[in-house]
Amino acid sequence: MKRIALFLATNLAVLVLLSIVVRALGLDVLLAQQGFGADGLLVLAAVIGFGGALISLAMSKWTAKAMMGVRTIDRPETGEQAWLLRTVASHAERAAIGMPEVGIFDAPEMNAFATGARRDSALVAVSQGLLSGMSRAEAEAVLGHEITHVANGDMVTLALIQGVLNTFVIFLARAIGTVLDSALGGGRDEQRRTGPGPFYFVIVIVLQAAHSAALPAQLAAFGIFGSAGQG
Image (cartoon, rainbow, N blue to C red; front, top):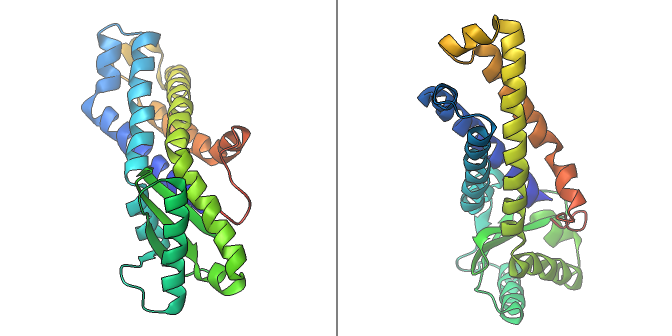
């Protein structure tokens, strides 16, 4: 669950940033002036949608470390850390993937997550609450679950699914924004002369934010989520 929340938060930020860049560069207006209709808008939506998802995926390890305060274990300082490294290494060897980075983050909840753009360069992190509250056999099972996510390439699958969803939402948000902006801001003739007005940009951002808020339920329908409390 944690890796999904981190990915979604990063994706929303990237989508908003890309939307601002598109607006600032006048690409929306340029498409309209060049006579691009639904096809051109769909291409633009795909570039932003998949671009945001893939950038989020590329940033996922950095985001996890920064937002969750994950401390990676380079040299184990305690027996618990040494056991954690050995267990992850054992699971990774059985799954035939590269050794992930291993980290711990401060949280009382029993939680763990895996993230990363490549199966041979992932990050597996567990909460201090999990290490304190679970037996080693239970914790080992959770770690195996997370390594399975890495081996199956679930984060890449998530990024592709999110890219598709983003594309259609961005397309519909701009179509709806155009209609409402025209209705609220003086009509299509004025819009053609000056480009989209402030209502358009606000509507687009609001609809994209609503999409990101609803995305966990959408992804759950594809079976992306793991077991509760295990990432």
